[in-house]
Image (cartoon, rainbow, N blue to C red):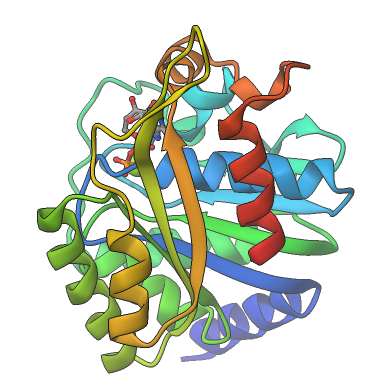
Length: 262
Ligand code: ADP
Ligand code: MG
């Protein structure tokens, strides 16, 4: 239809102004996708890039909370969605910031979800970006598929933890990407080991190295290991990302190395 053609053209125009598109995904929930998307965006912004972060986890949006962003997004008379500006060069959009009542459970069917994501991409006023980071819900369901279809040139960043169960799910994600032709930027291992918050000594409570082995086995780039840091949990709850603090931590160092690898 004419309407669809227009929407596709609008998306094409928007995407032309964005240099790199990254989809953060994993087969499993709770491995830290949203945290990885958050800290990657912050690190890239810190390096001076123009960054946009889009939360397409329609059922469990968590990005606004991590940044401590409240309030609904403004819509222009031309129906453009104005993102939250966490920093002048870091814009954030989440479905959560578009719903009046954020406690009401969102129930959308697959095709409807595709429409919402399509509208997001078509209507967000990103302007010129170096990086658009898309935070997906867990799994290989409708949302990553929609994003892949709408942004065919996007590259996936696959998140895992060192545990064997998570790594098995990661293999599923990698195979999903291969099947639907999403290019993979690589694999990042999150919550590897533990740095003692008091003495900064490394405590390998989780096994490490699984991510690197899996990436070698599956023949995709390894983007690094991000340690478990209890302050991250607290920062997420408080809505203040921990790399905002001046202090150098192993977590912060790892996040910047990961951003360099990306
Ligand atoms: P997902 O988006 O994959 O469901 P989240 O990013 O919401 O995962 O993270 C799940 C929980 O784990 C959150 O409480 C978050 O603060 C915590 N978390 C994520 N990464 C780390 C890390 N490197 N160190 C400590 N806690 C982390
Ligand atoms: Mg999440």
